Amino acid sequence: MRPDRLLVPQQPNRSFDLRHERLPFFTNPWHFHPEIELNYVVSSTGMRFIGHSIERFSDGEIVLLGSNLPHYWKNDAVYTEQEQDRAEAIVVRFAPHFTGETFWELPETKAIQRLFGRAGGGLKLLEPLRSDIARQLTALLKKEGLHQLTALLHLLDQVAHSEAVVTISPGYVPSHQLTRQSERLSRVVGHLMQQVAAPVSLPEIAELASMNPAAFCRYFKSQMGQTLTQFVTDLRIRYACDLLSRTDESISLVSEQAGFENVSYFVQAFRKRQGVTPARFRHQLRRA
Image (tube, rainbow, N blue to C red; front, top):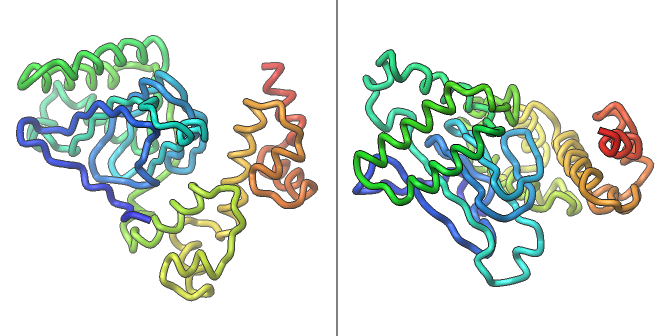
C-alpha cells in the first residue's frame, strides 16, 4: 500500500491544483490530504468511501471534501477489465488558506470559510446546484490566470450560499483519527476497504501495521472507536446495502458477495445495524 497522505503537486502557474483526469479507472487508494478537494465525476460508476460513508457514485456526481477527510473511489469491475479511458473526472485541490489567511477574514469571504468547515464530513451537491457547478468546472479548465482564480472563488461562493447540499459522512472527525501514526492506520483501513469481501486474518492485518495482534487491537479501537471485527462487519453491511439496492441477487448471494460466510449471521447483523432484515430493506427501497 502507498502512504496514506497524498502529496498534492504545487503548480508553478496557479495557487491551486486543477486536473482533468481520463483513465481506464481511478487509481488513488484510500487516502487523505490537507488540501480541500472539489471532485466532479464526469463519467464512470462504482463505490465511493468518504469518512464512514460507503455509497454508489455515478456520472455527474460532485462532492466537496474537507481538509484531511479520507476518501477513495473504487470503480466497478468492468472498468478494470478494459484499457479504454472510461473514468473521467475534474478535480480541484487547494490549501485551506490558498489565497492568504487575511483574505478569509474579509466579510465577503466568510461564507466560503464556513463552507470549508461544513465540508469536514464531505458535501454532496444536489440539483439544481450540481448541474450549474458542473458547467462552471468544465469552463474552468479553459480559463487562465486571474480569470481562473476568480471563477473558482465565484463557484465556491455559490456553493456556500446554496441549500442544495447534503453531508456525506455526518459527525466524522478526520483530525482525531489521522494525526497519530496515520500511515499505519491508512495501510490497514485502505486494505480493508479495497478487499471488503475478503477473509480477514488478524495476524495478517496486524502485520500491515507492524504490530503484534494484541497491541494492534488496542491501537485500532483507540483510533477508530470500534473493534476490528465491528469495523469490518459495519463495512460489509454498508456494502451489502448497496448490493441490495442495485441488484436482484438473492439474499444468500448478497451475503456471500459482502464477505459473510454465514447467511444467518448476516441477517442478524444486518437487522442489528439497519433495524430491518435484508429482505425488508430491499422491499422498502422498491416501494420508495
